[in-house]
Length: 117
Image 1 (cartoon, rainbow, N blue to C red):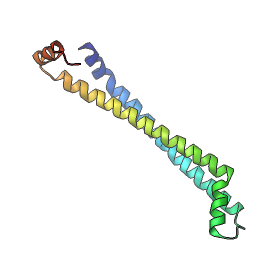
Image 2 (tube, one colour):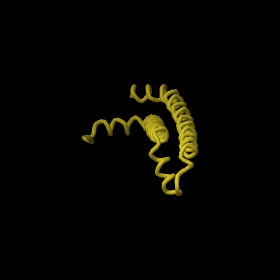
Image 3 (cartoon, helix red, strand yellow):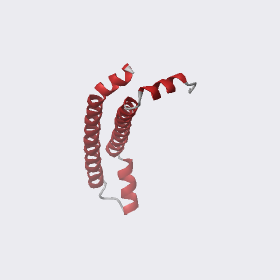
Image 4 (cartoon, rainbow, N blue to C red):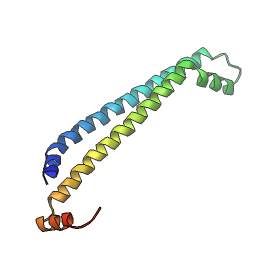
């Protein structure tokens, strides 16, 4: 029961920290999207002499700056997903502790006495 009390005491702060991380990661994703759009625009201008649209798209896609920014965006989106999962975990842990904390003492004793694995 002490673990549940500890979770109930610390979870709100952990949820707040996780929410801040999600907000930070969302900003990184937005910045990465902007950087990618700038790299695409720059590569488009540099390759504007391309003979047709397909060639221009291929040259832009193969541009080193575009590839780097695409990879940065991929990494930023992965970090955002990871931080959202961490926040969900903290929220679920808190909700579970609240539910268990609200159970009657007799119910808790019967659960701990049973052979549930």
